[in-house]
Image (cartoon, rainbow, N blue to C red; front, side, top):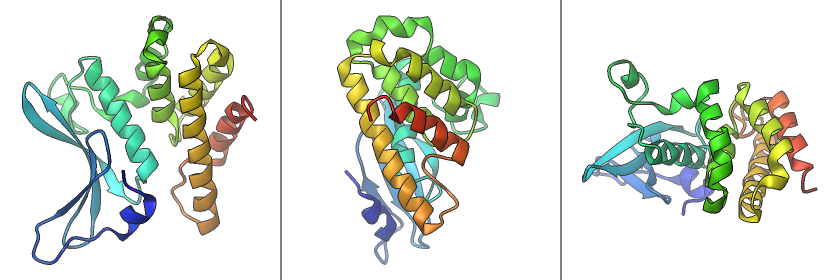
Length: 202
């Protein structure tokens, strides 16, 4: 798996058209000879290999790219067709940006979620990973939901969510110290929402 330092220092060797640094679960960072870096999620559909662009680095950091990969996996598991942004208007596919909508997250957090706890809370973890770093109302929706459902989640899911949130806080603290415009936890109001969640285990 990649580290933030490896992503920052990644270069394309002279004479090569591109360099690809694999992370995990189909996620990789592609580096061009000019130095630009983009995240991609590689997956297979009907026996053919495809890839989905997840954004450029460092605007989309390592943790955010992993959350986007997990959201894409969730869509694929639900039978949705993964397409690049804008493609959904031409077909029936669903892009990652569609999950920003209330109905997208509500689908993940619907009453059907209660029947999936046997999957170690996979859907709950995926919803949290998608919501971390979002600078929309989705952050507060997810945080408030966690505050009410926390004790109904299986232990494995709570541990995974705790690790993800703590990791996001560490990255956010570092980004704020550097004065970065992009912050892993979003705006101050978004960080405050996750701070309320954090009190569940502190």
